[in-house]
Image 1 (cartoon, one colour):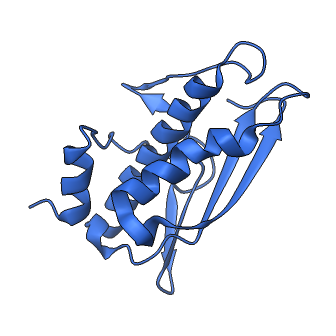
Image 2 (image 1 turned 90 degrees about the vertical axis):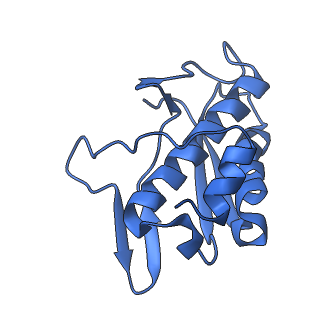
Length: 140
């Protein structure tokens, strides 16, 4: 039976994607000493990367925020696989966001707000977290 967090996801008309296995020499998550670390997630939707390009050139801010939301949903999908029940989440600690952007793009935090805002909307106060928002010149 779905718990409170999954009910919120459904109420927002969202669906957790099928978590993707690791595609190289790493694991999708590590659960140790009461903490869960999840490997980086791409904006995957229906088995493909949903948004490609660079913010500041060929991707609008809103599309970047939507991509960040997809990444957040993929994080939660991995968490569900790791924990079995998203209601076991007691607190998010850190969200690291990497934004593929042009050198002059400066709104990286606004892009990652897409993920942060969604995680708080889904998890409530347990979704409030510390954060890093970094621009990069290339990413998958």
